[in-house]
Length: 294
Ligand SMILES: C[S@@+](CC[C@H](N)C(=O)[O-])C[C@H]1O[C@@H](n2cnc3c(N)ncnc32)[C@H](O)[C@@H]1O
Image (cartoon, rainbow, N blue to C red; front, side, top):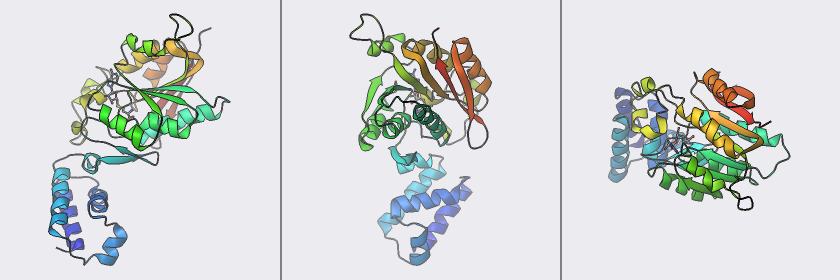
């Protein structure tokens, strides 16, 4: 079969299977598997495709038709201009999360602190932790993650992007994790850090019952945020305030209907300068605040 015929066949298959962005997905599969971009298709569309190559393409297209996310088939995805490896067991980095990263970078750009200590809770693929380390090279960045399935991706992405990020494996709702931040020079006291950043699981029970075919392939542990989706915000804002400096930043990604609720949680936990930031679609997407103790 020639290249352009295979393209048409693939796109038709994806469209018939209800894949929304069938043309985009076909383009990605062709680029990744056959190294054939749009220009190649235009200039060399009559090129014969070898049988093994056509088989590999068809097998990927069948996976996509069954609902497996494109990113899991490709095994990687872009975030903030860098490549992150993904697969079953780890959340696919979303463009919305780039807003969270931008807000943290902006916060430190406005300060003289060139070597902040930052903790990324619920790190998953490590897209937030790695990006912060690359964009703020003087920072000391920790990535906290519970899932053993996500852990190999986190490690691989840190190595691949040559980012000096320290991993802490554990449950962010367990206060014992704070022992990692005990001050060796001050018995029983915590070393105070500059920022706690998190894109925690935030879907409600109701939303968990209405997941799209693709999102159902992503790990439940990465999505379910308790009955009202707010469990992690309540716990993190109180527990991890213990290790924030006076004026230290807390920054959360949120579901687009959670702005007011998360703002309220931060207010009740004693944070100040609380702000809700919107994403490119105009939805509430990030909440930031600063810890003050006096
Ligand atoms: C919404 S995903 C975010 C992943 C990544 N930070 C991102 O922005 O793409 C939430 C992550 O939290 C992890 N997680 C869930 N419960 C956790 C817990 N109690 N302690 C630590 N990590 C947890 C999940 O495994 C998942 O990787």
